[in-house]
Length: 193
Image 1 (cartoon, one colour):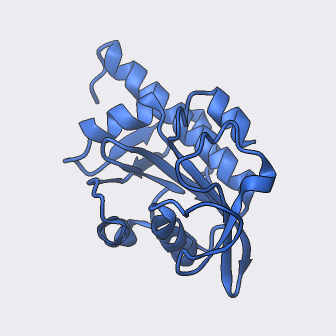
Image 2: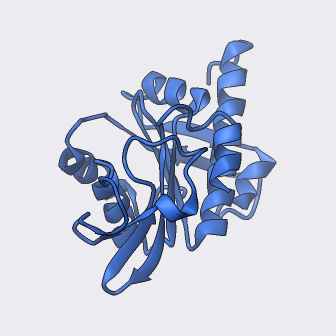
């Protein structure tokens, strides 16, 4: 699955990070170590981290963004968190960083997100300001986690998406990335809304 996300250009270089909950009590996440190409890492090189981000098994260091994954899982009871650096997500996150978020409405694909039952709806993907402090990012996104449409953007950085399990997280990621690409395309052809 991760290689497919990489092939789509959503986590080039060492960009992006992904976590899967192995257990909620005590919390343990399966992740790639920091600084590796997510499209090339074999399963045997993944690490397991605890609720503090400490590496329990495997080689390598946990990503600094592990704290943000932990916050999302704790607040939403997600089974997986997927973080990408796509061009649409990165560009739109900077464009909308001082607004209420990226508003998307009227698209059939929205119905693939949990809780959306009609294309005749509006969702807002929150955009939070970027920081090198994961504590600041976690505090900034905290108020949005309950109402966000299974995802949010970090300005100039990219998209975080989650779901009840890995399959739901992948579905939400693909739908949100599709909707962000549609929004960017609309802007490029002159629809600025």
